[in-house]
Length: 142
Image (cartoon, rainbow, N blue to C red; front, top):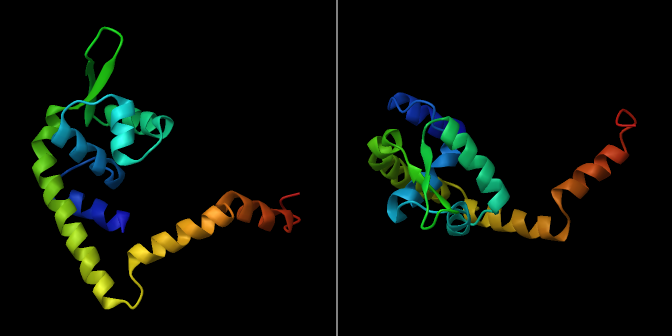
């Protein structure tokens, strides 16, 4: 699905945008500049994970760091490049949500239920532990 969304961006001449950046860009558009902690909390990510993502988004030219409320703090803000396409990104988000709803109507098992069921299974036993068990059985892993 991410590859197809990336194709939509390419078709729309939105170059260098990863689908995984869009939620954060839309959140920054809606709320204005936020600290990494505030942005992480608003999208349900850890500070560490979001810090890495923000660094990649900064390198790609989608966000910049601006002065915060005091001299010690910094906030993440949209660049002009991001502001120029954020309306189109919101349209893509709406279209993607509608396409997912259509897809769910075609299949007997809702995608949202799949995600919930996978999360519950991983709470019982992590993906790491599952992989480690398989590797322990593979002599090539040694």
